[in-house]
Amino acid sequence: MRVIASKEEMRRACREAARPLGLVPTMGALHQGHLSLVDRARADCASVAVSIFVNPTQFAEGEDFAEYPRDLELDLEMLRQRGVDLVFVPDVAEVYPPGFHTWVDVGPIADRLEGAARPGHFRGVATVVAKLFGVVQPERAYFGQKDGQQTVVVRKLARDLDMGIEVVVLPTVREADGLAMSSRNVRLNPEQRQAAAVVYRALSAGLGIWYGGETDATAIVSTAQLQLDSEPLVRSVDYVSLADPETLEELALASPGGMLSVAAHLGSVRLIDNVILE
Ligand code: PAF
Image (cartoon, helix red, strand yellow):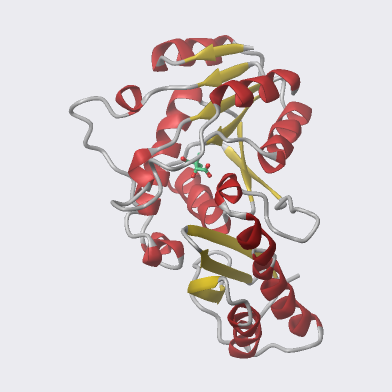
């Protein structure tokens, strides 16, 4: 496994790699969710590249960029065991050298949900993903459904900019109590960790009444919200939403494919999760 910090060297290594090449973009602090993407890329592709870069431009002032968990040595060990070929570990100056000015804006889908709660977040995500795609030029790129809106943004970016990259989205990997795996979970204290299961309980409650025949989006959203309200350690809820899977506009009438999503704060940790109405 080659670990590469320079864009030029990474570009060369990717050009020489056996094809198809699959890319798994990450911010490190890897968990089973990331590893499921790596395993799928390994099964699908002749070569696998993983990027590890905590991207400062997707964090706003006052967010958890400095506190974001980092453990490069452990990450590299896990990737070595999974048979990854190339790991790209650039520093901030390598990705954003002096004079960098070009940003990717994917339009209104970036302003809803996470975008409303975290203005500028998806401009940072879309820009860094476009840059990673530019350096690696993979045939396929792998993302987790847990960051549901991010998958919509990345698909749109790849389509609108004619990148010719297939965006593969894989199911959320969950702990036994339903909590979606996330690098940020390590920042929950034991009480918060126990309480955090309420996020998936809330989504499941909403999903449950949809399965029971409810199609009024307000009823589904309120059911999920009630669950969140019942957990005293939930400090605040940024949104509970039932949105169209492509435009991310709020639905009045629930329909298959709709994305029921939540963002809630437990202490200083912000958790997001979603389920798709099947
Ligand atoms: O999902 C993430 O870890 C990040 O948002 C990504 C896609 C690697 C871009 O920094």
